[in-house]
Image (cartoon, rainbow over all chains, first blue to last red; front, top):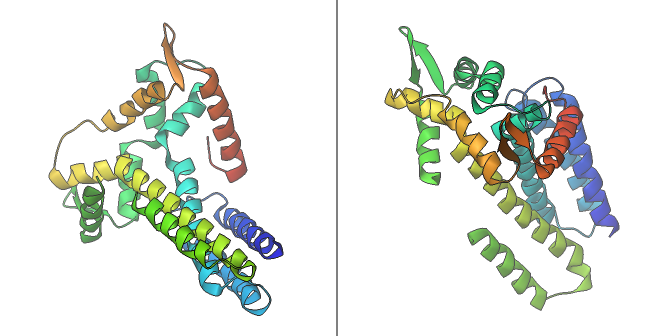
Length: 147
Length: 115
């Protein structure tokens, strides 16, 4: 049970350090810092499991990978979910569909999203219009298979 | 379904050779596999529903679909999940919506996400 407690503490530490590393930036932008945080805590905890714990390193690695993926999914969802953002907006009072969409788009509209696609290397501006990059095409192919 | 089968198969296979010595490792692997399944599921949902990726697909196909159609659809989702109800004054949070909205607002504060 002590081993499990150590792993839980390590996971909380990785999430906490990630938040410190991310402060003020979006998860996509700070992904390298987040990976470094999770990687560092993983290495330290793996060292402990090899030396003193009854948990196998393979088992610990499976858990760590799954925990990172779950945290990444939830954190990313909290940050970018339109539905959750609208729920928070509605706490200030009732809104019609048009008002709600207009308020959301003023915060994170088409231009901001295209900028983000360009920053992520998924789209580019060429001769006055936007085109999808090779990376963007690959992402679209993967997503179309998931649908 | 595949994820549930993998986790179920692992638990069944290892329970036959159960020993107290390997209990921690078996528990950690079972939790780890569950976390992988949950993580992959949530990332898949995000990719499939992403408005930004729909916008990218629109750029790719040079289509002229309205950008806000995907955003507008979320209002329907909120109604379907009983988070909001339509009133004469517009969309209003239900009791459940107030609860979820409060939790999300608290998460935004803790995570430093601009509301």
